[in-house]
Image 1 (cartoon, rainbow, N blue to C red):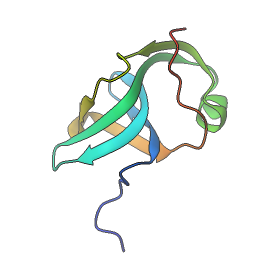
Image 2: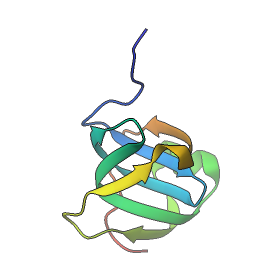
Image 3: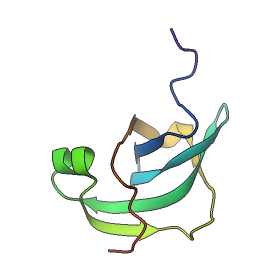
Length: 90
């Protein structure tokens, strides 16, 4: 069994107490995850379509080169995605 469920270099969709984040994982710490190419998703389409295809109603990207730290205590669930990360505001 793997000790750590997160894989550096993979793209994730992370559901937190303040909605959704997408990004590429660059570092894992005991209490935080660090991502690049991050967008905050305040509103999704239907959940299944958002998960499978990366379709969202609203997208608020962080600056292009920003590394965003997300506290692991705020995470409800996360999974690896295979679609292109959203980088344009919508």
